[in-house]
Length: 483
Ligand code: FRU
Image (cartoon, rainbow, N blue to C red; front, side):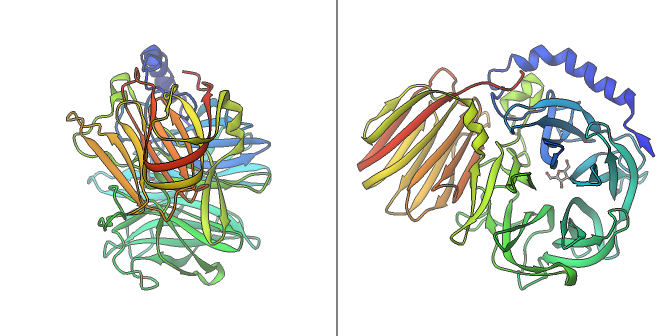
């Protein structure tokens, strides 16, 4: 039993202090999204509601803007909008996590936080080892490591990680992302009566299961929820080949809906749906709060393409989390919507009722929220350009929605993501200095992307082929991030 080493923490805090001004001077520093104080952030971890506060942890390499031996950074909030930075929760300072305290989850039991994470180890031969580990916190601030509780079972490679723990019918369950020795991705299930001793129950979904066919060489970051009687397995398969508008990013993030019998380790499910159609979304994690809401944070990033450098790297930081979203199941669909609490950020409301969008122009396109409800559509197509290069357009003939941004390559070419949409009823946009999240038709489709546009051009310009009438509400959003 060992506490996070103070020495390691001090080195991190010194580095934060040293670079604080430089990080703060980045014009692309976000105004209301969670970012690392320095270094690289990836997956949201351990999302939990504990004694009246939301806790979100994140994969963090404080030493570089690249992946490495991950820490768990930690933020706390009572309203999902104003976040306080908490001390480092986990540091890679033990033999079983020395190359990274990888992703995992938190549950509350006996008024304590139980944190499950993957200890990533490179052994003396350079081979990977994975240990599912437990850490316990009495106060939600200091975490005491209890060490490994699960080792990789037979039949799997060391790509065995990202425990997500939940409770059903008085039993604890854990889903884990796995790779079989045949290099097929799977989600496997464990169960426990006390959170300390775990039984391997089997595979609940995977390339070889339920006639899914070839479906990736590794599944990361699984999560399991029940929404309105529907069992939903969220998972991030790696190695899917792009098919038309499906799987446009390097790694995917999506879900299967079906019926699970966890006590028999079975899950009958339908096809895979992507959660997000933008460029930057991966490794989401959910929790439920005191209001019974299912909330989700995602990493607003994805694996880096070779040779692509995001502009924030010059300022010693990279990546952010999405805004928190609420998940609901309505009319046979999984909807994602921004949490209501974000309304606190609104200032300077502009409202246009039943306006013809042709050639409409608005100011204030840097950091804003916009709700656009289509009242009458007699158009062939519609587009909305924000700044110099970011745009969203919809073609009613091909039923295609296109999101376009300038790529981060030095060549600066425009690049696109597409999705199919039967009709366009509404847009709900959250734009920050260097990100955009677009919720379409009340959260039926979401597109999340980082955008690094010229910050001087703050115009929003609409173009319509035909006639589109809409009601628009737009707000500027207040800055809540400390720097
Ligand atoms: C997903 C992931 C996880 C792993 C973590 C390491 O982005 O690869 O599978 O636990 O990141 O930072």
